[in-house]
Length: 215
Ligand SMILES: *[C@@H]1O[C@H](CO)[C@@H](O)[C@H](O)[C@H]1NC(C)=O
Ligand SMILES: *[C@@H]1O[C@H](CO)[C@@H](O)[C@H](O)[C@H]1NC(C)=O
Image (cartoon, rainbow, N blue to C red; front, side, top):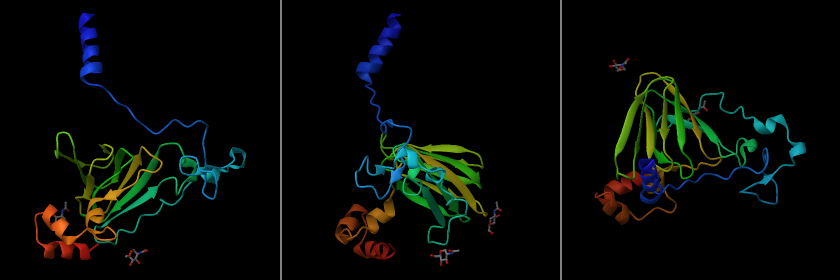
């Protein structure tokens, strides 16, 4: 018993635990009324008695996303914007398509943990931790495998097969947000000064100018 109490004391005093999540909804649902005037957590709720089945439905990810782009992947999001019935429910999802060797480049979600499931192909996934600082965690995933990208950590996936690959992700926010590192750093509007980036990346102004042109 004394040992159990010691352990509890250790947990509470030495390792304080902080938990945070999106608030529990105060109603069954709050289908987003995207034209509403009174805002609740970003958007208004539709009158529940006027809600239709289609408010809880989105058919937009039946089709493969267009992966003809420089990175060879396409993320098709299903957030509250595509699916108004998600409003206030704290969850969203995405379909990700990859060309052979296509990359979903390093990015993070400021408001969500991501649970990633491979539906087709072989995918290398990785993320970098903040504590310990900059530890790289990576794994090769096969069809059916599941991997978690913890909230706010930089992560990526790459198709390491000669055939197309496909995955689905669930995200713990109705509006997870996405910050793609290369776009944020080299494609901001207006540009971050070349001198700042050259110093940060320990390279020349020419190299930075060259990269900025691509974004
Ligand atoms: C896919 O995207 C590329 C590049 O933007 C475009 O040229 C092409 O027409 C698109 N294909 C389809 C089927 O929409
Ligand atoms: C993928 O394609 C490359 C180049 O065509 C080939 O060398 C390699 O063996 C292929 N790998 C598999 C697993 O089919």
